[in-house]
Amino acid sequence: MQDCLFCKIAAGEIPSNRIYEDDKVLAFYDIDPQAPVHFLVIPKEHIASPACITPENSAVVAHIFTVIAKLAGELGLENGYRVVTNSGPDAGQSVGHLHFHVLAKRSLAWPPG
Ligand code: AMP
Ligand code: ZN
Image 1 (cartoon, rainbow, N blue to C red):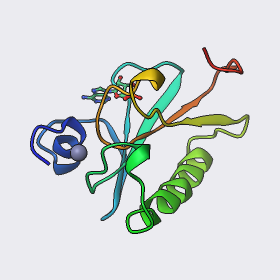
Image 2 (image 1 turned 180 degrees about the vertical axis):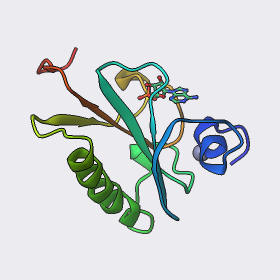
Image 3 (image 1 turned 135 degrees about the vertical axis):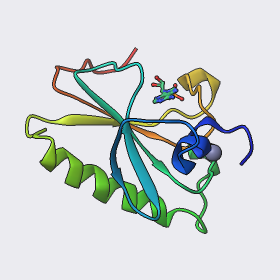
């Protein structure tokens, strides 16, 4: 997808601090961390938002959650972590490519603001 920031990161055209990569997904640290650990996991395929998940493209979402569980173990997040995905303007989605935030290593308020 032209002019998509996260497609460019997935393609290696824009640098990122990568944690994990396979043929379907990429995990990298957020450029503006909101917790001591804050990384993003994205499908390499362009999916514009959570609202665009369909029966045809949803398998990657399950895969992303297995990657998150593996990375949480490797990064020592035994005290817990939060997975967040924002969909649309009211939720504050600022990048139009599906991504899951993983936040950890601090106490996280609930409900979120
Ligand atoms: P959202 O606001 O939910 O769409 O999340 C987008 C996230 O992408 C924000 O937390 C940004 O800090 C993060 N972000 C934007 N540009 C970059 C980048 N070049 N590398 C890593 N993270 C980024
Ligand atoms: Zn994209």
